[in-house]
Length: 542
Image (cartoon, rainbow, N blue to C red; front, side, top):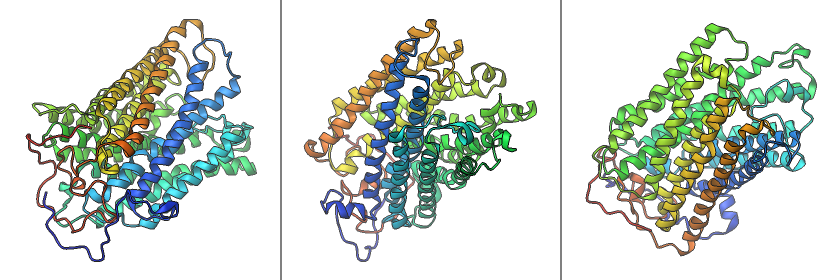
């Protein structure tokens, strides 16, 4: 990929690791600095959400509800879900890795709207502050789905503050998606045609479409909940002339595509990792790119599979079942093409690749169990059981977070200019994989045997599997803590990174590590297809 071109007028070379004080960070319009602001913010929310998960798993070690009252447990799983989904999983890869990398990968100086990009971070943090207020003031007990009429009428917890936080944060998601769409359309470097785009860009483009089209729906839905709760307007409460099933349709119309907001960017990360560490051009590039768009489109058509037991007609259930099976096809295309890329590749087993292997294995299990839930008869049996919890976490934790950590490790030398200790990184990847499976695989069995989710007490025959799950959660927690320690350590004590320690073919690796403010001293000109690798390139080890 060539970078021969014309100079950028007025370019000043300022490096990301230069210290200009707190004010310069809070007022920055540099997409890379904003990505790091997001990194700090969502890491904070991740550990708050994780703390609620720890308390839940401690309660579930024993069958009796002997650690907390049912009302308190309801608040635990609600705040865990709200924090993890709305303030970590949805923004994690797009806001951090997407913000940092999208302009560099397409040869641009910044995103199309730098000030709006900074505004989106402030909006996200303000939304998080409202939700943190709800936590400190006593929490909310509706579940992260805010099902009506309980949330709109009957709950006496801080529903309004939590809903306002989620409502505000939605605007951050919309602005980020809009920024990515315009940037990808209008700011690609000369020669960067659509089918020369990295698959990471295709994934973020598809994700941005969902963010822009889907997020307003859930924002309006949450606003309606607030109006009904505050003014007794009959929208969802049957006693006021409303329809609670309407809420489910509106909520899941966004919230199932939201699953793809969380997982599609992760798929883009895995495409970059697999091709780099297999030292091969991605197999079936056009199919992998097209499958991202197909997932975005089909994702809007399957929300009804969350409502098989809600009373919708059998015919509607059959249609949504078929569509739910159909949406699995583009996801399967990606897994098959990654596997084909690995075939006869010169595989390098570095930490990012270990996370990629973990993603492929765990996401495949999550995807296959999703087909069980798309089957009408099976879903009736396992609906609202721990089978659903396990399936969701295999997609979101086993998929999205594994991809997020894989991407963080892959691009960390570019972000920080330093190499992390490879031995510790491999160890933590192994601990995470073991801890995750020990935590969530027993929950498939618990759900099949009939243990409902969201209960703080359960029959004694389920204790062994619950103890296994809680033990796995403790291992998983250690696996999350170790990377935070050595990545922060590496910023001060790590060896300096060369511009391209992995021998990657991506355009972002043509810049210094860390990159200058405007990324490129000269406008890149793209002359080759992506993912052209040589088998003899060396890989640096931290």
